[in-house]
Every structure is written in structure tokens, then in C-alpha cells.
Length: 199
Image (tube, rainbow, N blue to C red; front, side):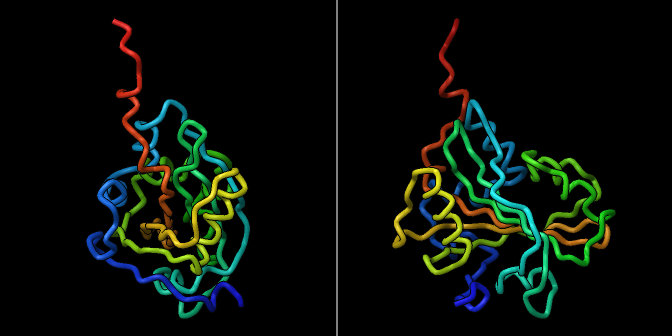
């Protein structure tokens, strides 16, 4: 069965609708740059690029992007790692209708953080956050689990994964970022709390 025919996720504007564990809910609703928060909870933060190439956007992304049906987009998927542990699976799509002036740095990001680019650009307008629980059959849940398995880590299929997404606009372009929070994110503590006292 093709991914776009699988069951869509239900996306909500309020985090209480997904009934996330308190430790995860705090990450889901965190304002500002997720990259900055993750850096503040680790000694070493890294973006691991899984791929960046043209693809068909997912069925539950089309409406958010203003498309009548799933269409071609530039897709980027990465793992965000804190102290070498994957804690977030991030999935970004940019419709092919966008041009280089809309998102001038996207195609050349490499292992740089997209979040840092978005929050540092005054032309970028950020939409409201939306939240969802992803079951095992959802394409992003499957991809996140596959990425974790490739790292030697396993997330049981019966375990729900919690995600948030946000639509960004710049000039005439749109860009949708979905962040799937992996169970390991709940173990993070502020980096200052792990720094030995040298006084």
C-alpha cells in the first residue's frame, strides 16, 4: 500500500487533545527554536541528515500546504541528536512551486539546523503549532522507527509517537516542518545541571 493511502493523523491546535505524558507535553509546547532548546539540554548537538530530495508530500500535509491533493515537494528528513543520542525526527516539505527567492538557503543547508535559519530570518512568518499522536501505520512514525533502528535503537510499534508541526511562510513560499519527538527526549536535562561544579 502506498504511503499516501495510509490513515492520516488527526492534528489539533491544543496539546491537551493528544494527551501526551507531561514530560513530552513540555517539549511539544515549547516556544521558540527547538534547536536552541536542545542545545541547552546537551553538551554536543548535531543534525544528522537522512535525505533531502524531491518526493510526494504526505496526505495529511497537502491541505496544510494549500494543495488540493498530495503533490511533489522537496523533502528533508533529519535526526536531531543530543550527545549522540537521537531525540527528534524532523521532516520538512517545501512545495515545488516555491522558488529560490522564497527559501534561498534550504537547498544548501547540509547539516546546519533549519530552525536556526528560520528563526534568524525576519521575513519568515510562523504559523500556529499543531499536535498529533502518530500510530505505527503513519508514514512518519514508520520512518522515525526505521531511522532509530538504523542507529541500533528500537521503539516498540505499540508505542505512540507524539509530534508537532508548524507552517512557515516567506515571500510567496510555504514550508511545513513536522517534529516527531522520540522517547529519549524525555531523559534530557538542562546542560547546566550536568556540568561539574569547578569552583
